[in-house]
Image 1 (spheres, rainbow, N blue to C red):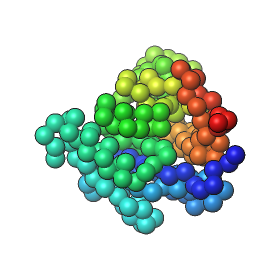
Image 2 (tube, helix red, strand yellow):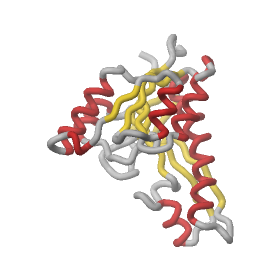
Image 3 (cartoon, rainbow, N blue to C red):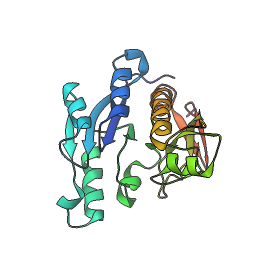
Image 4 (cartoon, helix red, strand yellow):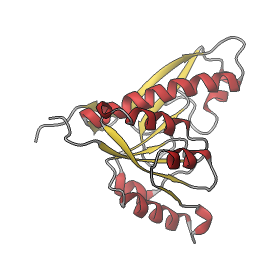
Length: 209
């Protein structure tokens, strides 16, 4: 059975929020099946928060430095996100790793993107690492977040060709375009169809009760 109400998305950002904007634009269509109910950040004065405010979406900020420990921050972030009762938490350019408390509360429903074809080139420098290695194709991955770094079960991947004269910046910009399209398409499917994580495999569709 399709859901009777839109899936509730909490989106976490750290910068310009271009992926957030793509989701906000998609959610404007009722047929998309989801709506952004809150946007959180780990710092003030970023365009991502302004995008949310312009869209009339509630925002919050949880800075690591405001808390006595990283675990305390993680717990406070989890508490705040839980207050919005999300069906899905989207890390959209969020530059902090969520921890054990957060994943304990929302594990299996937290997704993130990586600018490479996982499991290749994990970490902060995926496009540069791919270019340096000399691959002919790279791309982006959407995955269910686990305790590792870019290691969770894969929801979707999109391939981007590497050009002979590419710079890291030019390659990364093309990856970002593919990433936004992949994110919007896949989150919409997750919202409308449901999904099940079975080991390292993710299947779309709702299981029968």
